[in-house]
Amino acid sequence: MHPHQTPHVGVVVIGYNDAAHIADAVRSALAQGPAVGEVVAVDDCSTDGTFELLGRLAESEPRVRVVRREENSGGCGTPRNTGLDAVTSPYVMFLDSDDVLPPGAVDTLLGAAREERAEVASGLCVRRELPSGREVPWQERLYEESAVLTHPARLPRLVHDTLCVNKLYRTDFLREHAIRFPEGRFRYEDFVFTARVLAAGPRVALVPDRVYVWNVRRSAENLSISLDRATIDNWRQRIEASRTAYEILLNAGRKELARAARAKFLDHELRMYARELGLRDAEYRRAWWTHTRAYLGEYDAADWAVNPTSPGRLLGRVILASPEPRDLPRLKEFAARPARLCPPYARDEDGTPVWAEDLPRITLEPYLTRPVHLLPLAVDAELRPRARGSLLRLRLHELYGRVAPAGPRTLELQWRHRETGRAARRATVPLTPATADTWSAETVVDLAGLGAGTWDLRMRVCFADGTSREATAHARAGAGLLRRRVVPSVRYGVLLVQPYATHSGALSLRLAVGLNGVTSVLRGRLRRLLH
Image 1 (cartoon, helix red, strand yellow):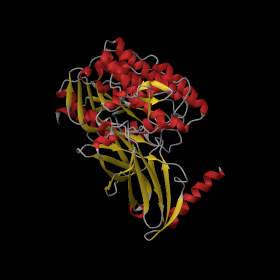
Image 2: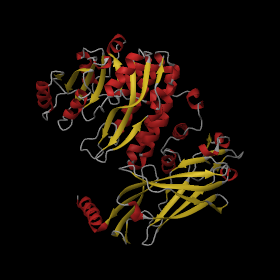
Image 3: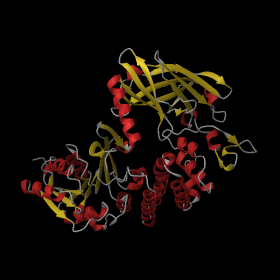
Image 4: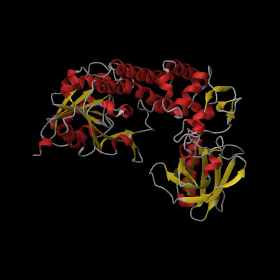
């Protein structure tokens, strides 16, 4: 037996009313092989038969121990703590009931932890979109290659990976430092747990391998915490978790990590929720604006000084400067990835670029020296579906006089299927001056060649010096441009075409092909209207 395969790891699986998935989670832990000496399955007082299902698994597998809580905790932290208390193995991992461990995950993490004498070993988590199965890496930059950190402060970006489930921990390290999850109905408990781990200064081993599969079920009746963002309470709790994580790091003397945690809030949380403000009602927006301003008011000058052209920092400064919600469509575009700074482009009395004429304090002067290929360029797009080649029109905007000197030459365009990740053939189209402040391009889109599904438009603006800027296109919405249309097709007979704007305002496309596909979409639309 390989030394990494001796029983050294306990896997804590938590679940509540998830009889449909928890058996797969437990089996994925058992399938890791002899290195897993125990699977502690904690049932948080389920009422759907989860506990009974776990009991049957334990009867057939001696490595499984089931712990049932007498009352539901309302969160994930308490059952994880319960499992941590029950673990007897030298190392421990955490697994949620609706996720799985991929083959070899435990051996990989255990091998890195033991060989590098690390208290924490961490690997790549992938978000698997279901039912399509498309996988999107989480915080991929951290796991591009193997690395050993004698202290987390050597890589402050570690604070961006707040997950606890893609990591293996030395059990006595957690117990020695009394590292536990927040109890009860505390959302985003991972933020706090991870901050406590980093504050304790562990030696960390990073591996580039996949070690966790996070199953994302956007159509589930009960959304996961990370997807259920429609209530203001979710935002309050996300702020509270972020604030608590910052205070833990700061009080432990980890100032660099604490500042990185604040930067992470601006770059991740703030941008994600700002993109979705257009989906919420006026009451939510006012409450969101108020809570956000209160939290950002706790930031100090040094927090704002680092990387002043970061989209998150500029978003935060606009919010702080405005007592009421404002510029929401423009903020949504700027919160996109990559960011788009859409017109109007204002200047103050001295000619300095500013966010808006009535917000001259929000200066954009740093953009005057930032390399053009890093600027938040804005490209408008409109798609006009028609029988003989649908026309895609694009327009690149000038940005405070920075674009013209760089010599924009071409746009590289590509449509990508959202569910499968499949990419259509790349097209390159020339950019030509249209007005004093814009460049235009046109190309024909073969909709039938794309086929059924949802397609996102990706592009790259290429300049004369060989540099380029990745971009997405702002979806123009005037004159019925985003209206659903039926167009004839030689290949399919008929196509149902729906250009639309995503949550961040980018142009995307829904396609249904053939009479059956079109009829299915229209029937679904009718059912929604009737209900």
